[in-house]
Length: 68
Image (cartoon, rainbow, N blue to C red):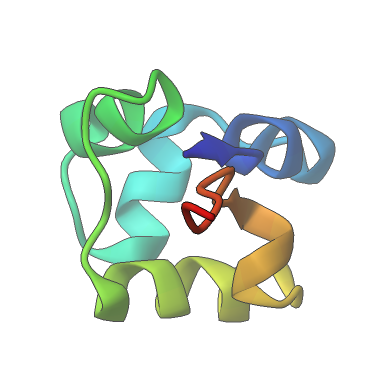
């Protein structure tokens, strides 16, 4: 899964710590999401999308393709 969390965070002018504070998670969680070491839960993904005012699909792009 590809994500654009870092792009949106930087566009907002926020540090990882600031985004973490706004989401109610640790800075380490934000870092893990941005570096693709952790896929956020659905509630966290929805909070991120709401915070950035974008659809979840804009933040997290699933490159999975159904086998033929």
